[in-house]
Length: 255
Ligand SMILES: [Zn+2]
Image (cartoon, rainbow, N blue to C red; front, side):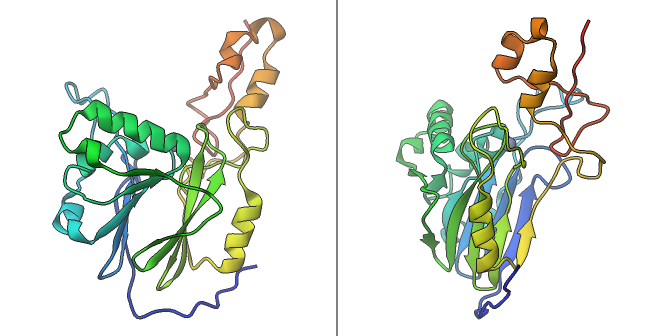
């Protein structure tokens, strides 16, 4: 049950998506008050067949650049490139620490190093602990473990002057994950008790009916003579015509 018993503060809170809505990839969002700004994720988009010569597309970061002195932290949900791949560009002009789950933090350090930028060695990349709150300006922030196709994925809960905001990140409810842990339902429930005034959640192909199978079930459904490396290396099987709730649907073909 939601308990919307916040005492709202004076500051208004603005949420500004800079990428990742209505499109796949390039996830980036700003949550801010007049004094403090947080950036959530900063990813890339991969080129389409009709954009030859372009290797990666990054969000338009001009708004953040203009107000960079207000950025208190860059918060990361997980280590997929469509959530961290734009960080080397952002950190050229943002002087604030990055906070990310442990695996994502390691991948970010690698991305920054690879980018070879002169100032990248000075960027502070912190691994977060899930059970604690972090304070950034007017925001209290907590990471919550969720299941996804990469371990160490998180939702982010922001306690703001205008109440609780839950940014779901990429997630699925798969209780038989092949990688990482199931979503932390207990932590989500506790967040619900603290109060969520706004849920930001995006689900690819959510309008499709039926449940999607997790990759574990796909593996089990394969005939044993086909259940070799293909399933053990965690590859998933897709049916592009009938994607499921995470954009993917089990496809099993016996020939
Ligand atoms: Zn992802």
